[in-house]
Image (cartoon, rainbow, N blue to C red; front, side, top):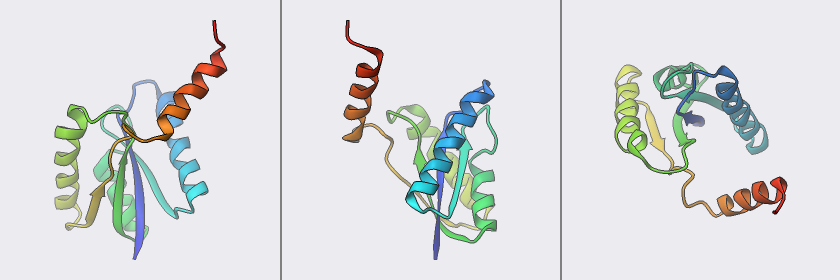
Length: 123
């Protein structure tokens, strides 16, 4: 059974921001050997979560993992994402959809912040 990945982001009215998230999805898929990957947006981007689920199912996914591209588990992840996942299940015949934790708490975040700090130069 193939597992598809959805990188789920907030979305922006600035399309270059949405395209940056799509590039991250493509890089994750390539580096991780993930054959089935899509980006989905909460708002101001296309596709939405249900649309991305439909695309993955059409490409042969039997299981889907949604990875929130959010730093902290705020209201969008506690309230909106569970509702959207349930709506997508109902719309697409109850596929197996699991949600990964947000980026918050991942040990690599410290390294990323330090890298950004060092790249900006110390004053």
